[in-house]
Structures are given as C-alpha cells and as structure tokens.
Amino acid sequence: MDTSINNRLTFITGGARSGKSRLAEKLAIESGMAVTYLATMGVDESDEELLLRVGAHRRRRPDVWRTIEEPLMVAQAIESLPAATSGGALCLIDCLSLFVSNLLLSMPSGLSSLEVLNCLEENVLKEVDNLLAKAKGREDYHFLLVSNEVGMAVVPEIQLARIYRDLLGLANQRAAAWADAVYICFCGLPQRLK
Image (cartoon, rainbow, N blue to C red; front, side, top):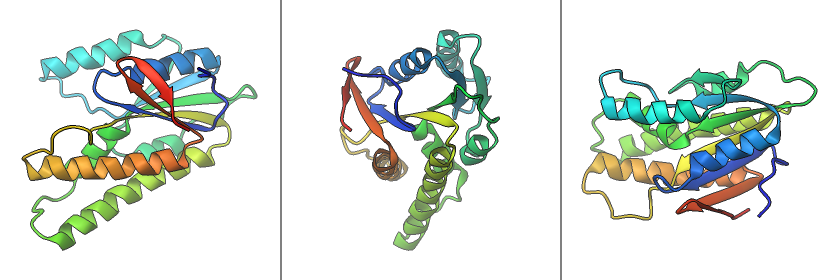
C-alpha cells in the first residue's frame, strides 16, 4: 500500500486504538518535512488516565516536531502556522473527534428542541468546514487529519452521546469529501479508501 504524502489533505479514521495516530505519525516522519503537531486535547492535570494517554502520544513524537495544543481555535491555529520553507511543511491534526467534542461541550446546554439541535449542528459543522477550508487554503503545508469512527457501535443511551456520534459522523463525511486521500484503520491495518 502506498502511504507516501502526495496530497494536501489526508484524512485518517478508525476506531479506538486502531492505529490511526501511529499511521499519521509514520506518514509525517516519512514525509521528511518539518512537522507541526496540532493537538486538540485539552489537558486536565487532575485526570491521571488522560495524562498517561497524552504522555504516550508525546513520547512517540520526535523532539524536532513543533507542538501546538489548541482545543477550540483550530482554524486560527492553522492560519497562524509560520510560512513553510521551500521544502514544504506538514501539520498533523490529532484529532477532529476531540475538536467536535470540545465544540459540543463549549456550547450552551438545554438540547430539548429540534430547533436548538439544528442550530447546534449548524454551528459545529460550520467550525469543521472552517478548519477544512483553512487547511486546504494553506498551499505551503500538507495536512494529516485524524478522527475517530464512533458510528459503528451500539446506539448510546444518553442523548448527548447520540448527538456527538451524529455530529462526528457528519464531520467525518465532510473531512472525507474535502480530503485528497482517506484511510481507515482496523486492528492496526490501514486501508486506503480514496
């Protein structure tokens, strides 16, 4: 399977612990470009499990990679990336699923009416589209965008979890449509879909 970076936007999805981030990191290393790692996880210093997960991701990154941690203003972070040198640069965004979750949790609660749900969906997807447009607009960068696939499991009992699952499914569809290449990972095995 060809996993070289010849595309401006590569989208990588899959379930939990499926190998998505490792594939993105491998592609970034193999590109030979300067890499910026844009992390969307907000770190709560009191959450030991979260600190262990974030620590594992940090240890896998080469020391020469620049890291930006931005949970909500991802489009602005993309816009603010320094101009790439003549060899080009790569930005690995890990991940779209956390970005959607961060957006969802930052919006007012009270999801009782269809009108409110439609407004919420519109606002979240507008931010996702903005992120994708900024990435595609940066001709001096290649982008790797990682996201979870959460729609293949049991329908969640909790309304907020169902809303998240649906929003992320729509966000992933948008990312796949914008992307030049799309991979899905199963059990550590990447399959190119586009």
